[in-house]
Image: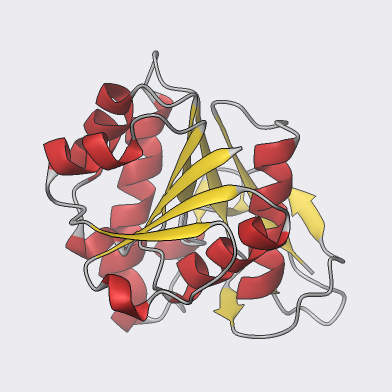
Amino acid sequence: MKIAIAGASGQAGSRLTAELARRGHAVTAIARNPEKIATLPGVTARKGDVNDQAGLAALWAGHDAAISSVHFSVSDPLKLIAAAKASGVGRYLVVGGAGSLEVAPGVRLVTTPNFPPQYKAEASKGAEFLDLLRQEKELNWTFLSPSALFLAGERTGKFRLGTDQLLTAADGKSSISFEDFAVALADEIERPAHIRQRFTVGY
C-alpha cells in the first residue's frame, strides 16, 4: 500500500515509518525537517508543514492511507481533517492520546484529579480532535489512543486492544511502547477493524 505519514520524524511517527517499511509498504514520510527521517527501503522523505492545509493535502494525495502523528498543541485538527478530505485518501488515521480514554463511564482520564498538569493542555486538545472526528460523515477515520504511559521500548507484538476505556495491566500500570503502538496501527491499516472508531492499545 501507499501510505503517507505527517510527523514522520517524531517518536511515534519514526516507529510507524519503520514498521510500515518493514512490511513492504511504500511510505511517504513527511516532516518539517526531512533530513531527520531515517533512510529505509521504500521510504521517501518529503518536507511538509501540518499547518499548510493545501500543501499537506497535495502531499497526501494519491495514497491509500494518510496518518497524522503530530502534537495536538501545535496543529489544527480542522486543517488536518480538511487536508485529509481534500487529498482523497481512502483512510485517515490519527495517533491519538490517552487523555480522552474513560476510567469510568463518562469520565475521561484528562479530567481526573491526578492527571499530570503539564500534559493537560495537549490531552484536552487530543480529546477535542476525537470529538471533531466523531461528527465527521465523509472521512474513513480511525483514532488510536495509546495507554497512559507511551514510551520507547521493545517491539514485542504482544498487547491488548480496547475501545474507549483505559487499559491497565494486572499491576495497575497502563503502558505501551512506541514500537508496539506502531504494530497495532500497521495491523489496522492492513486489516481494517475500526473504521470511524477510536480504539486503544496497551499491555
